[in-house]
Image 1 (cartoon, rainbow, N blue to C red):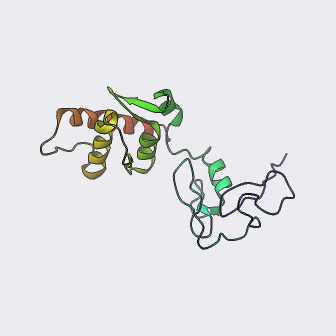
Image 2 (image 1 turned 120 degrees about the vertical axis):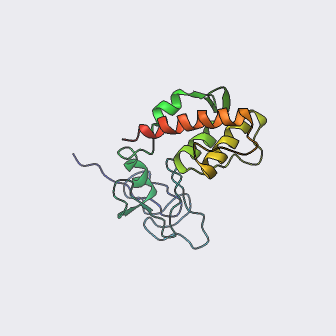
Image 3 (image 1 turned 90 degrees about the vertical axis):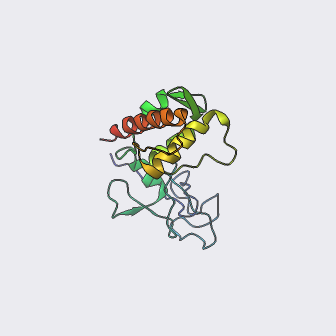
Length: 172
């Protein structure tokens, strides 16, 4: 039995609700048409990759093939970015516990997937050690000897490095 692929909007990433629909109800473009030049393009919520100006993303399974956001997301089932089930097991509400610290789950997952730290300008003191550790690892690596290091930051770097190693081990 073949699976019918519904058309997807290249501007916003929405998928048609049923076969036969030709226009996106979210942004009004016909399915398959190129996005407007001034439009904000969709981002994959799994790998955080932004769509290119044509509204397509590289396929996670075959990067030389370009696909819509809907297909890209489905293909992550066969090409995961890390061990998300394990990471979810560390979740505590909207946060995650790393060693003796707690940090926002979304910040930690985005860092594990992209290596980019963005704690946001309103980050709270309870996760400053984790965000500082991520920033230091991104800049100097996991075995950095930081001048003027705080013991808490060094301990947080060790905890984040262990988390990174375990998360990415699950990708195979």
